[in-house]
Image (cartoon, rainbow, N blue to C red):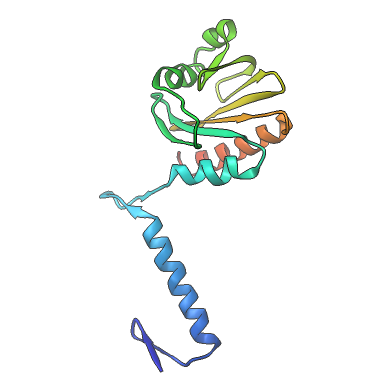
Length: 167
């Protein structure tokens, strides 16, 4: 017999199930931390690495706050504070991107479409998709191997999810 947190188990498939369940709980507990308000603190980097760049359609990505501060970026992709502020502000006032384009990570993109939720830009065979949520702006850069519609769908769906959980 083996005792795990007061539960006696036989050496069998049942033991393996409870052990996996315990490890799953333990890993979830270690990955998610709780703040003083007892709210779960999310890992923004995981969204960039898994939900955006991890799709294989997006080359580089970032999540920034409405104030322009960077929350998470893919490796080698830097959105400085000035670019972040302009990008976040473009949703309410697109005049700057209409005349001067979209500057993201020192690259200039021609603004193709913009509204109070989404901004799409183009540069050569690639482009940029930016989507605003309640608290953040998702930025995704794609190259010539991806279809703009695919990238747009990926970023918009992640934004819908984040909006649904009040982010």
